[in-house]
Length: 186
Image (cartoon, rainbow, N blue to C red):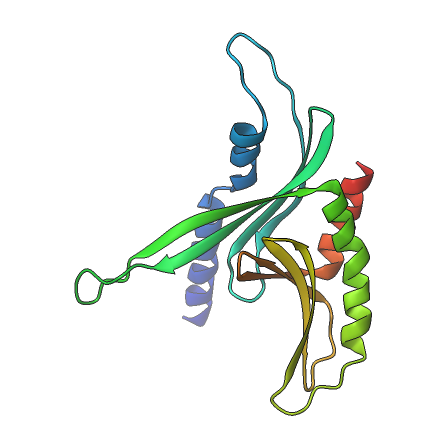
């Protein structure tokens, strides 16, 4: 009986994840907001996928895609943002989804790489007290800052927080820094 339930659960999970569509939120932005399309003309743009995945803390979706276009190289961040709508009737659980886009220059991408290490070194020396959390941040742009947080008993800097327009997206430091370095060298 337990085997049947376990097998059924695995099969259902496999079917649900197999049916999920891959998301391309930054592609839409790059193709419609950055690349120019003029009637009767050709256009070429190159994109470079840096990260597509969910935030470790709340499962919100985040994409980072680099591009080369018109003699420039830059990055677009696309992030889901959800709001609870005002109840229109008792028990209304309507959620409004929005996608945030931020463009970063190549220099700002390099700033993330350079300054994340400085933040790591700073946070490692901190000794928070009971119930205290210490944050060290670096502001990349008016819409984005990166952050490390430490509380009593935690000593890891394995995840970096990207604060995008006030929403936190926690992702693997090793993954994002390695991929940003590859993009810069692309």
